Structure formats: C-alpha cells, structure tokens
Length: 345
Ligand code: SF4
Picture 1 (cartoon, rainbow, N blue to C red):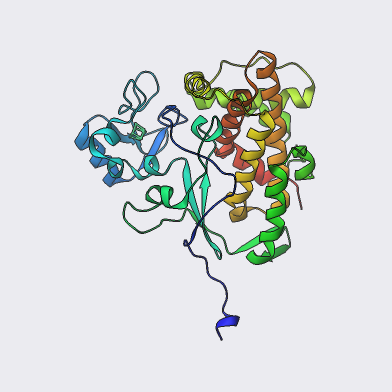
Picture 2: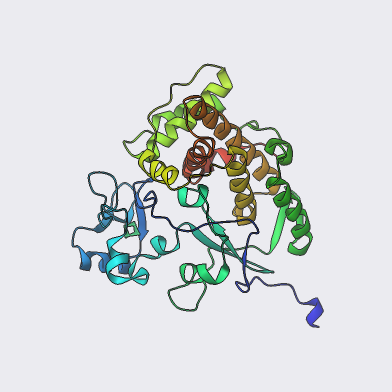
C-alpha cells in the first residue's frame, strides 16, 4: 500500500531555508587559493586547457586535477575587476561544476531538495543580500540543464549515537533550532552543550600544535594558524599572536559595498542555521556530536571575532572573517580527524 512505502529522498521541490540570503557581488574570494582551486574532472581540465594551455593540470599536493593560480594566489582566469573571464567570455555553463555551484549546494531529503550555502565567502555573510529564491539558484545546482544534482541524500536523522528519527519527526525539532538561531538568544545556550569535548587519543593542545604547523604559505595555512593559535590560547589562557589577515582584500570590498553593518550575533547565527539545515553532519555523525563540534568552532570564532573587534574591525566583518576561517578549517581533514576523536554520545 502507498501509505506503507518507505519515504524516498527527492530533489524537488527546491527548498530554501527561511532567512537565508545570498547573491554574488564579485567580492573575489572564492576564486583564490582557499586551499587549492578544484578539483576538476579530466573533461573539465581539458576544457580549461583549451582556453588556456597552462590554466589547469595535475596537482601533486592535492593529488587531483586543479586550476592553476597566478602569483597573487587567484585563479589564472580571474580578471583585475574580480570577474571570471571564462564566465564573461563563454557564459556560466563553461565554468567547471565546482565554480558554477559555489557557494550553493543541494541535499535531497524526503521533503524535497534543500538549497544549502557555504559561508566561506563575504557575498554570503556580509551586506544587504536578497533572499535565496529556488528558481534563481536552480541553474547553479543542476548539471547545466534541468537535472538537479544532489551533493548528498539524507533520509533519517541520527539524533544521538543510538537514536534515529524519521525525517518528519526531525523537521519540527529543527524548525525550533532555526527559529532560535535567528533570534537574539545566546548561541551557546541554543546549542546546549559544552565546547571542546574530550578527544580520544589526543588533546586540544596537541591538535592546536598540528594546526599551527600546517602553515603552508597559502591563505588556508593562515586560517589554520589563527584557529590553532586560538584553540591553544583558550586551553592555556595565554594571549595569542594572530598571524596576518587572510583574504583581507575581499573583505575590504565587502565592507565598502555594505553600508549597514549587521551584528556579529546575526552573522554567527546565520552560519549555524545553515550548518544545521545543510544536514552535512547527518552523513557521518549524530546531532549531539554536531552540536558539540559547532559549539567548539563557535567558541573559537567568537574569540577571533572579539580580538578583531578590539583591533577596530566592524562587528559584522569581524564575525564574517572568523566564520570564513571556521568553514575553511572545518572542511579540512584536520578538523575531520578532530570530529572522529570527539567523545560525545
Ligand atoms: S574558472 Fe572562473 S569561477 Fe572558477 S575559480 Fe577561475 S575565475 Fe573563479
């Protein structure tokens, strides 16, 4: 009988998170060496090389096909006005899929396709942006035609180590979280868990040393050093000595186009709401662990934000720069290792 059928995941209708806002202002951050620009498929590599023979190829460090960067760390196709020359000359469909999608994503659920956004980009985190409309973003999360491509499929929700919910049971719980994350309530109180849980076979001090040692000359390395230094300082109580400001030029542009600052609470709340909505955590972890992991990154981010604000940086920009670092580091294998070690049941 139809009523007994297990709910399958689907990508339609497209669903945007209420309150999520984004448009590309060309702040020019995503086309720089966040860590490396890619990966590309072999076909995309060949297409990019047809436009410029030296623009893409095998990268030993990433063990994948990647776009090449110019001396300033930006993609070779980035023009001085921060626009993409592939997009400008040949249209958005000509860009590699990763470029076409970023910072958007799609998760298939039993209720439809959730449009997700990364916050590694001031176009997502700063300024007066329009609400995300599913029909507007559809070309970015499709194969260039009408087929929507999901990054992941989530059917059931792991609430704790041994407790799973049906998606329909999760939705009202999640709605409460999303509502509170967009209020003025203290964020750590909403997450309702302690940051920095015990780690299996390691310590936060040891992890912090590894983060600081990961400096590799890229902007990613600088973000790693900021996060590592802050983890160490929060554990030991010493004052950190922050290393440079990654991607400052892109945030300068974002600040100049955003006359009305938001509060740092709004920027962090918006980020956390998208982290919950993305359901990335549900692929490999449960929600109790996700809350502890997010509380930890939030504690690190608020500390970074506080130091930037003391140095005179505008509240929304200070939070947006911190969120940028938290997301870049959060996507790395270093942070995955930390999540795997967290003792949370
Ligand atoms: S190909 Fe275009 S969109 Fe992709 S990284 Fe290069 S400049 Fe940016």
